Image: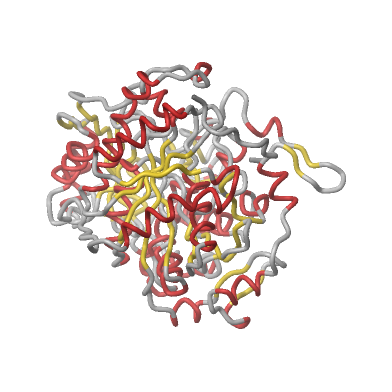
Length: 562
């Protein structure tokens, strides 16, 4: 039996361009922000002033939105985040969305934007997905200023004794460009400086993105920037951005970027958008400042974390909540029948056909994510994000399985119906919040050695049988612990497509060993990064990138942006 048919829905960009937006001052007033507390960027976007951030104390209730391991079938985590927030607003709740800023790389690559979809979007969608208020450009400039000052220091005599072979600070740009993963710089003669190997990372993978997302104010931002390790001397002593006297100028470039951005949902509700995409190579969360501000403005706050719960949610709990003193009280785990069938072995071109047996096989992925979130003491609501090809038998199979695991579940139809289609999920979340208060706790103690923390994550969250370390990782772990970075959280960088470090192992792989090929410092952010398997910090474009389908018509309307 097929579920009730969904009417045809226009493209995301067509819906966004047809929307009638509220003036941003009206959106601000809905949550008590006064005209002098916002800094408008045109009619429909604004920065929120530092005074407004400082005045608000977090009193609202925090709900995380996460998901299953992503597949090419799509899951719709941002769409559900926005849609359920719209549903809460329809139910009379004072709700604020605290969501991440999109990266240009995926917009022009394959994944698309990060402003939601269908009738559950934040708007103006095109501006949010493109240059927005310039935060990513400011991060790029600050990051590359430090790169330039580092190479200038080498050229001008290298008074700090930096070993060119041990420089760890890369360059950055916000575009997928695999040709920049490994480069040689300073070619061109004596005036170009010492020739050396270098690399680029995409902006969401920049340590400055992580720092901006964790900094509480300008003073904290400058202190964190000063602690960035750019490389080591020949006797393995760290050299920092503070040593290069770069932190003040970098802070200047970031003084506006540190302020959260206010926009609105398609239904006119407030949305705070700031920092943080890419939960596979970074912590993948929006800023602490944005989340705490949202908690001071609304009674309910929906925020999201990147990719599946094994990556974004784990880092949200173990890094962001730890540093920000946040207390999440519920989590929504987003899944789709289509994606679960892919985890059960169905190919993408066969997903429209009912296959309950494959769906049952793929449910192990959803169950593992639900169990993992519950390990942090946070109750779970599963949002089954509906596609038109889903049959009633398939929907019932998922909902019944969730009930057997002790997790609430409801059908989400926000893409087609906006807030109305999210009310079932919203009511389940309200039921959870009305029960016994969550007993949130991080997974590990930061005082543990680096390897112990890595192995806890690998075994408890990924289900690995053990962890193997490349020689470079072994050496770097020893060095990091020797310079005082052993007692920090660990930010795992791993493929988003599998619990393992092999993207082809879908579902719930078991018996595998995780390989850590390198570990490096993010001293300014306050954690170390462990690279697992073949994960890249600079993505590449697909064979047919999304950029090929994008057009701007003479009247300014856009085609192909999603």
